[in-house]
Amino acid sequence: MKSTISIKNKKASFEYYLIEKFVAGMQLCGTEIKSIREGKANLTDAYCAFFKEELFVKNMHIAEYSFGNQNNHEPKRDRKLLLNKRELRKIAGKVKDVGITIIPTLLFINEKGLAKIEIAIAKGKKLYDKRETLKTNDVKREIERDKG
Image (cartoon, rainbow, N blue to C red; front, side, top):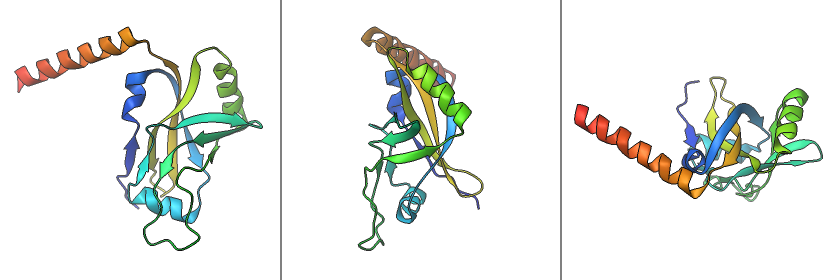
């Protein structure tokens, strides 16, 4: 099963320094995976949080499935992330530091047809850091434009 579904959180690298990345599975219901396969998901305001030693992704919007019936899913429900205990302990230890958060950066369908999410341990950027990122991107764009 070949799929090219890849939903990115474009604001993540602009708003945060991405320290370390992990790939996790998600606990989804049937209509959620169908909506993801149609590409109808949004990671922009999503974040991850621990609840009773389990990691959940919160505020991730997966649109309701258009052919669903009354048993359709809630678009912004909390979804459990599937990681092993060693990874969960490692993430929990790093998040205890001040200013560190967990954000989803990429939602994709792997070669087996399963929905996976890439999460990153991140630290927020200051305003002057964001300006510096914009400047470097502009310089790269100018160089590419001059080459072409």
